[in-house]
Length: 139
Image 1 (tube, one colour):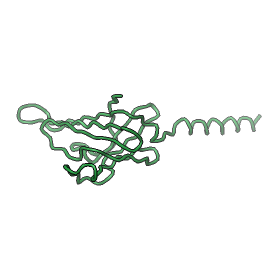
Image 2 (image 1 turned 30 degrees about the vertical axis):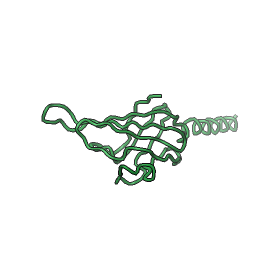
Image 3 (image 1 turned 90 degrees about the vertical axis):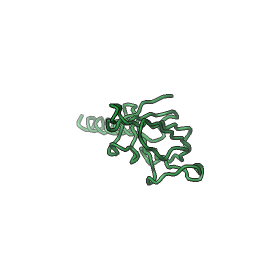
Image 4 (image 1 turned 30 degrees about the horizontal axis):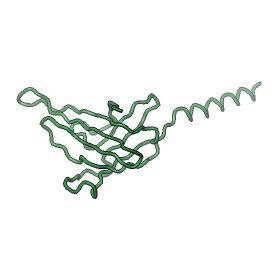
């Protein structure tokens, strides 16, 4: 009886590890949005930036940004690489000859939680670059 109980515990442990680990490959092709609000301006509006991260396939992505009264950079084509449980997006200098990006690579990291939510992290987030941010998924 004691051996069967230990086998049951071991099997439960193994299955829970499998169920709760996720691979970067689990992040599906699609567009992921994150909007960050900045400081209040003289006219009462808030500065903001929205990043549209379009994962095209397992090697390519396009990041576009739209802004209300805020500077932004590093938009354009990105190469995608698998970093274990994260996708790393690196700005492609050879594909973006008319713009520049001074932020160190990778500029964006994406990870998927067991709940299915996709989070993003980037030093480009002007007003709060620390930690992981929830994205809104548009497929």
